[in-house]
Amino acid sequence: MPTAFPFTAIVGQEELKLAIVCAAVDPTIGGVLVFGDRGAGKSTAVRALAALLPPIRTVEGCRYGCDPSGAELCPACRARKAAGGLKTRLSPTPVVDLPLGATQDRLVGALDLEKALTLGQKSFEPGLICRAHRGFLYIDEVNLLEDHLVDLLIDVAASGENLVEREGLSLRHPARFVLIGSGNPEEGELRPQLLDRFGLMVEVKTPSDVKSRVEAVRRREAFDRDREGFAALWRKEERRLRAKIIGARKRLAAVEAPDAAIEWAARLCMRLGADGLRGELTLIRAARAIAALEGSLSVAEKHLRQIAPAALRHRLRRNPLDESGSTRRVERAMSELPAAA
Image (cartoon, rainbow, N blue to C red; front, side, top):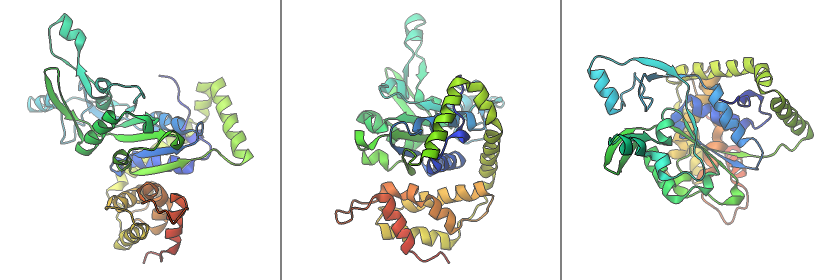
């Protein structure tokens, strides 16, 4: 596997890095959408995630990567468990790319034609959704994804399982993953149904100061000349962040959101006119992840303010009388709210 650019070596893009780390701490946040300029590090950050994340425990021999301690097991793992227990192993957290031209078969899986033709056996060939189970599914140029694949992703994201009924096959398997999408808004908008499935939306911009641009270019040049050597220089920082994520995951269940924090989030969403309750839920979950990363056991207003733009900017109704961008509208609404009691 080629050496990836270290996550901690990325210059700037603090909101992007925070959103990805929050999703790594708490997958229930609902994924991350990254929109912005070309060449600003969107794909680099996502692909760096694979080397950063700690391994997960899976059932040995399971093609779906089932969690041996979880309630959701595939039929084969349920049979193994009933027959006397499950053998386990540590596996890398999957970070799977969905190519723009991928077919439906490639995404959800299909009949293994080689076995069907040579052995006469009906066997399932797992798709990318299967490979991404308990990890991350990354879609570059997500706004250009074909509509029928968007519909499939929405169904699987909502149900947490992949149902395949085709070519004489009928099976289902657990499919829970964090969806990460990136794109350039100039190339088209995202369908509202899929947009709503992303918990956080990050705006990425090219650095506007010379110092940051020079440092970004310098680091990329050093990486391209000697990938292993550059990665070794950042290994200590990578290990530190990995340990921070592991600690936050362990702490997360103990982090409380006081009534004052929930009320502040609700007032902010009401002031912005956000539809439904997903805004509040995502905001609270992301703030809990930030608190856990900081070692705090209680959500504070500072945690909410830190992640509110990413949690809410894509949930706002368009206001023809307000030409302000969505980020500015969230910031203005926060400035008008009284402090959490």
